[in-house]
Amino acid sequence: MNVDRRSLIGVGLGLGAAATAVRAAEIKPARHGSITPNASEFSVDLVANDGRDQTTALQAAIDTAAEKDVPIVLPPGKFIVSDLRLRAGTRLIGMARATTLFYSGGAAFLTADKADGLVLDGLTFDGAYKVFDAGRGDGLITLGNSKNIHLTNLGIRNSVGIGLSLVECGGRIEYVSISNVLDAGLKSLDSLGLDIIGNTITECANNGILVWRSKQEEDGSVVSGNRISKIRNAAGGTGEYGNGINVFRAGSVLVSANRICDCSYTAVRGNAASNIQIVGNSCERLGEVALYAEFGFQGALIANNIVDTAASGISVTNFNDGGRLAVVQGNLIRNLFRREQEPEDKRGEGIGVEADAVVIGNTIENAPTVGIQIGWGSYMRDVAVTGNVIRQARVGISVTNAPDSGKCLIANNLISGAKDGAIREMNLGVMTGPDLVRETGASDRIQATANVAI
Image (tube, rainbow, N blue to C red; front, top):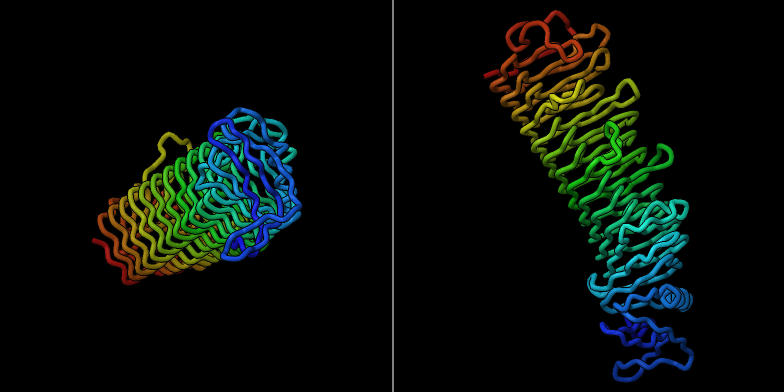
């Protein structure tokens, strides 16, 4: 912030009961670096920590500051407010999250529409679990139709809905902590190009980060370096909720270098998300598939991730619905488990793929069902599984035996300690026929060569 070029609004306080005038005026540079306000100014009284609602005063400051293109700097303390509406160019700055805006209830807490250039920095927003009107927005903070926004060093907590909801927004969200929300932590719908980087999201009832689009098309958001933990699926379902990161219909999204743990379902779930990249994430203690590409996508790169403790490691599926074209490379997957309480879909698979896919250079250890599963029924085409290491699996590699499925190559894999065979054909998950490492199968669709079983 350059005070010799820009004006500044200081929203005064006292940590006790004293009110201080707020000046919303242009500040002209003076000699020797000092600053002096001109004659035009308005004053508004704010008092920190005294229990009074101060919406009117703060809204007036926001409106005037946006009109004059000056930032507002709020000192430490708690300010009770409701239904604040941010403007284009609003720059609302607090003191290292020691400035708390506390929701008093009403139709909305904080919203913005067409607020290009919005900056929020150093603030904490506490929703106090008070109900807001979903017609005004589904988040405690809801921003719409805004370009070049920058939200940094914020705390968002205690929301009865989503923590931070963005609709048709572009810009950067970084170093934001979102916790104790009763829906998703952060939701982006129809992004204009969004970087979601270095945030901490925990204790969410349904999902961590959502990157969604209204229809299937390119999105291009970057979700990187975030810490996501303790995500439940309070709303139930079979995977709609309980995910660390969910990318839905949004194409060309990069999900990289995130730390994701303790989610009821999935660490990263791409649904109808073409050209998704899931790269270099650390994922632990997941209740279902750790990394998912499903339903009507074309193109998925899943590489260099670590998965430790999940019902399945990686699933690239739904060729029946157009899901195809993937590279699964260099992942470390271990300590998988079966959900024996489930009537179906017990899992326990390291990697599952179906169509137009390469599975190369992965290491899988402790898979109670199968290390790598190729196809399901007739849904398999053009799969190459090469150079993988599989240890301590019930079956090392399984491949569908449906006569109308496509071809696959299984080569140069090392399989150690497989209890029920290194490479087996299967019929919808039921293993059949000989071990293809030692005997030739009946179908020339499956080419198994130079594999080692010990």
